[in-house]
Amino acid sequence: MSRLPDEVRWRPAKRSSFARRDSNLALIGAMLSGVVLAIALILLLVSKVNPEQGRLLRGAAADVLQPVHAIVSAPFRFFGAVGGAVANYWRAGSRVGELEADLAEARKQAERARQMEADIARLDALLKAARPERRLVASGMASASPASAATRTAIISVGAHHGVRPRMPVIAADGLAGRVSDVGLGAARIILLTDASSRVPVKVERTGWTGLAVGRGTSRMEFQFDTASGSDLIRVGDRLVTSGDGGLFPPGVPVGVVVDVSTNPPRIRPAANPTGLGMVRVEAPWLPPPDFIPAAPAPAEADRPVPPASTAPATTAPATTAVSSPVGRP
Image (cartoon, rainbow, N blue to C red; front, side, top):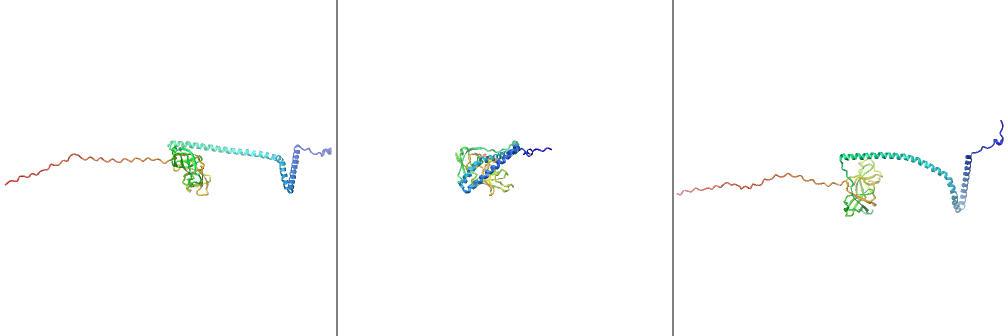
């Protein structure tokens, strides 16, 4: 077997371009690390000897190292952005699936609602049920009394000339505002829900519990209800709407939201801001008490006619006159 020359046998293997690049990058990284460490040591020594000069040098070093830091951190930012984009893509895909499921459920609920409306319409046509409807009387602007007033009232810009009458419900854009108390020709006064004399029949949307929203003369109301009306507890965030009991307020109008259940009774925040009602609408009572027409009295039995008294002259028997016979003369 022939032996290779020594210069051929010990010739180092030729490295690839990738290996050279990796080694160059490692060398550059080591050099940068050394430079940074050296600068840090210099700054530390200068700060110990001359704090003011050290502060200036730290500022200059920060200005010099800022471009280097930007270049070094660029790949990390790039890969972080790519990873975030991929994560957002996968999250978007899962979110799209959730939205599609929600949309399908919403379509089912809408179909059930349409079916229920059709059933109600058929029942109404079959039973010829008379359903009361809400009727607008007038609309106007409201100006509430100051919060320091003894009573919580407001003045609205419509009155008797517009058809407004006492006890009519007043509804704002966000919910029930109160009821009319006094009426003038061109304006009227309303009692707000927060007034101490206000009582509104309400129910909890979530449970259907009924009760009263009672004013306290402050910015909050109370929810007074019968604790035996259900098993669920009142929760913070429960919405209260008018129940329609009493016939004055139409059902389903927002009244307030439960904000505190630690007190007894729970506290309610009004749905409509009493101090910023703005435009309001006055409606006729939803189910006003009927004006009963008194029934006509039953005709009494006619008395029998009394026959008139007889006017014929009464007949009397002729009187007999006794005639004395003549006495014989002697």
